[in-house]
Length: 414
Image 1 (cartoon, one colour):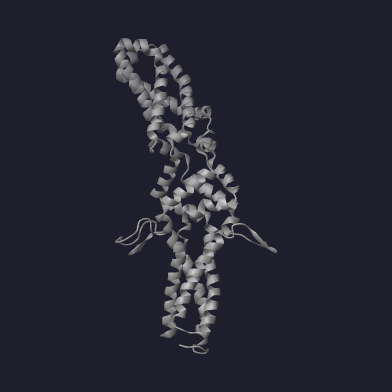
Image 2 (cartoon, helix red, strand yellow):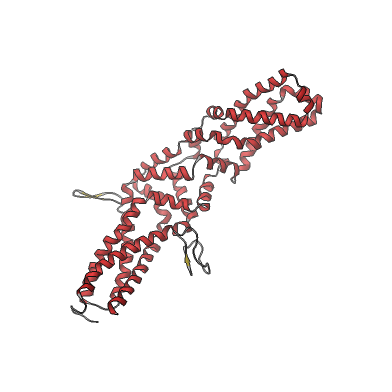
């Protein structure tokens, strides 16, 4: 060890930029892999701090680890900048909704009325004059449209009381952590390609500096130190140029701008598509309304409308029914019909999915509004969710580079 030149074969100098480039590439690739994988914690979970990807002997991808927080941050920003639930549901036309549901609704009502009537007054219902049964059918046809339209008007007016869309979104991302991965991977696919390749480019440049230092000062600690610096710096530079500079700066014919920010229109379209296909789709929305934490409000609303509808539906058979079973049983029969309508209506909701998706038009809304965001607002949709963990990714790159430097040390000084 000492100052001077010629203490090592020429190849040991020339190979250092190449190794640094390879190290930069590998550390960036591994850092990205460790960002997304594994989905669940891998290794014996002997000791692990809450919401941290690392354990004493194991690792979980950073994004899957923070799935709940990331989904919550993204959703809060999305609802303040991109979506207004009341405005979106105002686009539903109750008359059109009733039209697409008509056939399924009438079939359901016909089945319910027949089953309940046969349960409470089988002989009377079997022998009921045809004109009375026809009147029930006519009333059913007329009132079912009104029932569905008034019910959907109330759904629109009280959508915030029956749908917790944040809980729906966050729960979906926690349940299926790969969904959060998919959002980031598809929105940032080109940026991740750049991160991988930039490790090679920047690593080679830092390797030239390492070669120069090693040429004049070949202390054994130079290789591990520069290995750490190469891994650290390549990750840091790659992550920074994705979001910085925030605004475009022109230097003659060259414009410098954050790589992610330059693709605002393309990323907006991808973000909207992935979210609406995987998370904010009509089926998930209705499932959340029917089974989510606010579902009791929905069913209370539905039951109230079902009772009003049933009163109109059975009015024509009231004299026959009371004569046959008495007023108490007639009241019980009405309750049974209303209950069955409330219980069975959710099962025919899939008939409305196509129209609802078209009417809400959430994908186009999210895309168009996201494309119009200012650069700071656009960055804020995705960047803050994982910004605090950038230092961890950079540190991981440094540690991997340090390991590569130690390997070089053994090779050069063996």
